[in-house]
Image 1 (cartoon, one colour):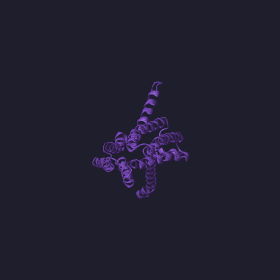
Image 2 (cartoon, rainbow, N blue to C red; image 1 turned 90 degrees about the horizontal axis):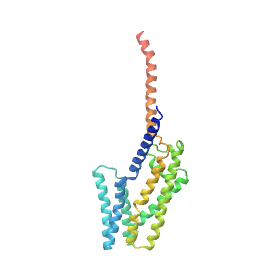
Image 3 (cartoon, helix red, strand yellow; image 1 turned 60 degrees about the vertical axis):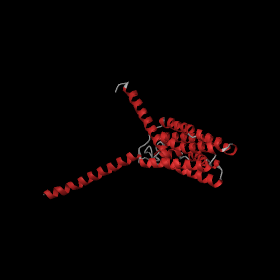
Image 4 (tube, one colour; image 1 turned 120 degrees about the vertical axis):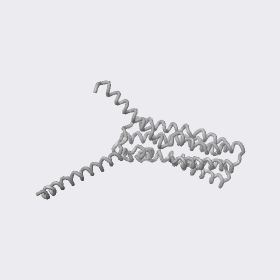
Length: 251
């Protein structure tokens, strides 16, 4: 190996690690399609309500488009977790708004969920089990190995969880005062505007932290290797035990 080869290999390894991280984040958070499915129902609700001030038609339209997104996913045999989460979120908002008769309450369940999620990121990090690690561990095939066997990666997950928690808290600090002071249309448009940018910022920071962290430990590959080694050991043991028997048979 020449002195020029090693930097090239290191660069390729770093690029591969970043590509794996990008793919994992894309899978975990749904990518562009997941963002569209997250934004579209709320955007439709606030658009219709801004035009005609009709809570019922706005709610029905938002719920209908959420169901359509799930049906499209099912028809394409694609993962439906992001679309289903959107349906449940919209359904809670619709039920809440219908019960109270206040169109702003369509957004309240989602706002409370955002606040709860922010607190979950912060509390789990303080407890030494950062939530982002629990979310991404299975995606990276490392499960919880980062907790005890990969301290550098645990630190990266902690930083990412702090980023998610603080960003979501900042979002809540904007939305909850508007819930009390602004009208439905104003709150709706601000909420739609704040759907994607904070999310992208949090995902980007997560990528930055994890791209610089040690590689994940593939516990699934380790288990497969252990199973293969155990099978080989049993086969070798069986062969050893079979040799004397074969020798006595020949005599």
